[in-house]
Length: 281
Image 1 (cartoon, rainbow, N blue to C red):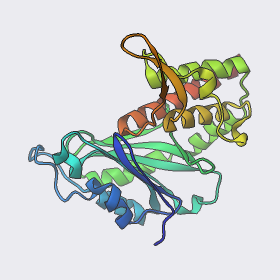
Image 2: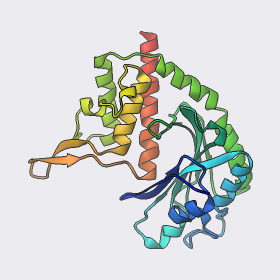
Image 3: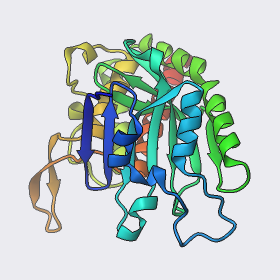
Image 4: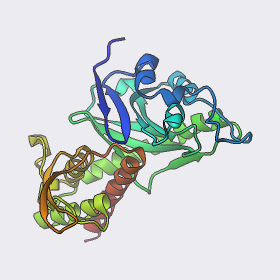
């Protein structure tokens, strides 16, 4: 199979994405931990090991295909074959649409993660992949019992949220924000990204679209612009060093799996909250 692959080797992870389903050769090259034949030797005998690839094969038989995968870069090289990984799966017949719902899976074989599943959405125009917030279903399966059956059932549990996910995005598209409201949204998005630390960039920079299609005033556009700018990074900014001197800096892409999931869900929850506030006004 020929792939239009995009691979990335960041500080915290290896990543691969394609507009066509990823086959096992492509996955093995970038995310070998999903093929781990046994658990990391730090796990006890009570740990039930099922290679993630077995679950992916089960989901493939159910019509789900992986289009994106990432694997963490652990500090201990001995864990590289068992490290935390994330895959995004969707129905192949969604190709060609503007947006598509996804099942997002996070797992590891070294005890750093249970199986986690979330509802997500991708915009093909910019390959933005978002994860829905706390009001949507999250499935967590620990490494014990009949894992494979629970994961397959979990995929369908998450998929039941897809109509609500599509409806939420439609409502955001129909919600207009004023300039002041967009700034408030951007300020909150920067808090989600940097916490109590001072942001190296301004709210106006976070709300600056990378393409003309995102120049409108809808909440959906605001969410997508902020999401893309924060997740992809690469924005020129300024930051004080330890001596208080202002230095030029450039924002970093979010490559870590946990941080990616956390910021994704926080931004979606923020947008949902903004929509409810506008609806109640």
